[in-house]
Length: 203
Image 1: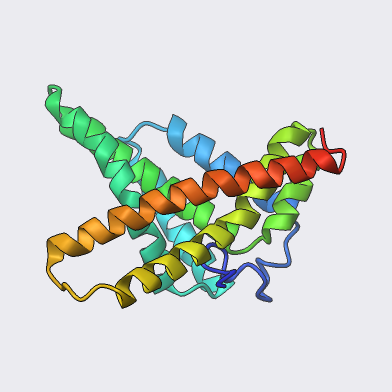
Image 2: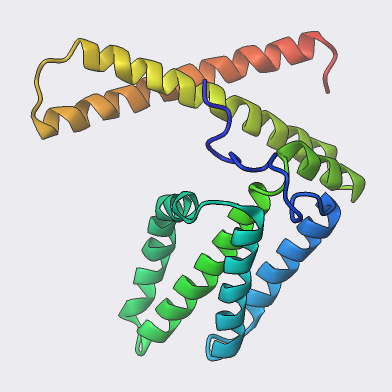
């Protein structure tokens, strides 16, 4: 099971990793809030923020290739939302603003996740009185995401070992089948976990 594909570099030793989780969380959310509020015409701000994020990446010793791959996973969602604005008059300006702001915010969150262990983030959330149910839900999601990914990989390997048709459309059909089965198994696992938690007095 791979336990580090989300925050692989969060337990390194660097000056940035040694900063308190409270300070990093406050700084990250402050950057995101300010990035959303600043107009897209404020080019110096966005250029300065981009340079600062590059510097943070270097100080934290996080490979740029790793950071780029994480962005490639998330950018399609950003582009999907932004494309809708192109239908409006001068929609390209809104589209550009969405892409720039979202990308910088995503980089900020990826750097936060890879410089702060998730357990420390949860500790800070509890300390600032975030509802316990939300914190517990985040902890369970983080824990069982790895289980689901591992199970999905096993299912895909088992299916591939029994498939001899190499045509592309058949590959997509196989992937859709695996995703559907994984959804069913995830639901069943969630029900079993919830029943076990209730049996141990969880409310």
